[in-house]
Length: 221
Length: 359
Image (cartoon, rainbow over all chains, first blue to last red):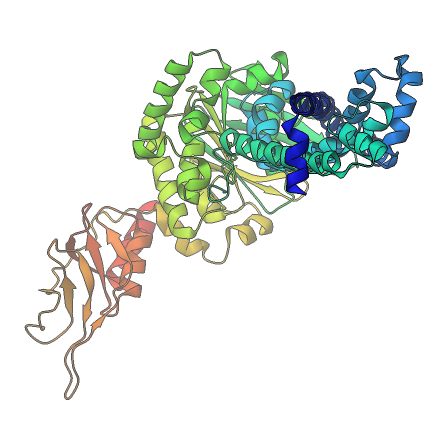
């Protein structure tokens, strides 16, 4: 099998294609991750602060995540008014999944910030918005980071589904392999996707480590 | 007058109808520690939090430095009022130094100036400078509380609110923190409003103590001696406790009390004669008692009783005598070295003279 993959990669045009698809895969996974995070944090903040918002926000997040990816990709053009082959379809759909995955960790993480710390911050003269940015959000990072890691892996795997609408990064190696009944690109696509997920995960773990010096295990109050 | 805290007919009724504080009139005098004490549910924390508008009163007026607290936006008001909370409430994601620098930074100081100020404060509360770079999670409970006090003092607020600041640490550490607070207060002279459920703490720290009963009604307000000697009613009498007669000795001086010479011997050496001998170390600090030898028995060192510091109140003198195996209470100086011994009956005789003077 390895031999066949190496033969597949020996062609410069194949190598170039795989690299292009890898780049596309990274963009299609990471951009929605960032967009989703940017939406989930304020949404989770609102749901955590406003009691009656919590149930509907968390409920619709759960429902949203159960919509099949392919259905969502296909629906996007009619919702967004984009063309079928527009990258925005995949990006927006995956951003929605990211929001669905991250809202609950944001709410949980904010719930877990000890009341005496929030009270002390308020008593020192933080206004709510600044207190959120300076105290609550940094303290929520460990729990939030766990959610972001799940969303990252989920996005990287879901991008492949986009291959069915012609925009799937490494997933296109699968469709291509199936069409010509050639196993090498399929296996290569699987291995590359797994490696990409692993590298992203390690990056996120590292990012969490450097961003939370006081909250690591062993430094816990 | 400028730093006084005044409650004028303050009432707090929560949305569910419970009354936490009822028609509270109270003045926390400038430069003094005023303690709010009472059982849980007596509204003491609610009262404290109305001062910095973390809770808004239903009716009545609260003045700080003669100014209605509602005349200023809450965040701005709070930056001028120190606040120490139970469990310290430190920010676990910031270093000790940056925790202390919080309020100066909020009020617009540069990072460098705020950190310099924070270093001064850490020194003031007796924390070694190498702790500055650590995170709160790496500190003991007592150290965290000191950081909490330093943080509250960082912007040099004239008024300090303390909400059960020492109740989450063990009794020995708590006593150290209380002594430290009294020392700091002697230096800084803040107007302190201090909440506790511990009557001993209230009596030790308070210049004046307000006892609140359930439903937020002020039962009695006065100096601690007065609460112990003349409780206003059954509730206050019950709350200050069974030992209040004994506790009131905390406020009686031992002037004129005879201090007897004690037979001392270096620890490890045998007694040099009959009777009780006090074993001391190289710095003449007491280490225990040697019982009078009896036929056939060895001479083991028996643990000593509590110590009475020279010039301390009658309570510690009597306790030292009562808890000493020899019946002689050990008196020490400020370095902990033995000065002499006191007898319980002579403490009581001194107390009788004190009563005679009072009458």
